[in-house]
Length: 122
Image (cartoon, rainbow, N blue to C red; front, top):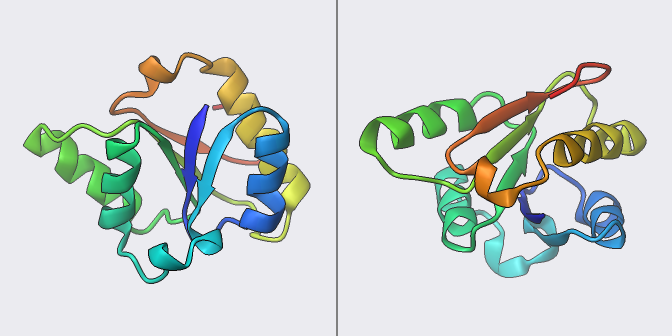
């Protein structure tokens, strides 16, 4: 799976483990040029590169995805992690891997938003 992790998802921990699992990952906190980018800019980059955007940002990304859908502006997918502390790396990896296994076809992610949480399937 091609992924873009927003700045609140640990590149050194989460991105590294996802890469080791075979995913192609960019992480905003690992790339200085992405520092300070707005959420909508990050989602646009993910869409341009056909990457699923992964975020903790329950406040902003659902609204952005809704506005994009209403405007007919596609994205390559959005996974929003909810109810898990940013430092619970093992749990974050487990729920993301479960989501990516259940929805393994990258093409099926187009314009879809998934909310994932502890102990709850995608």
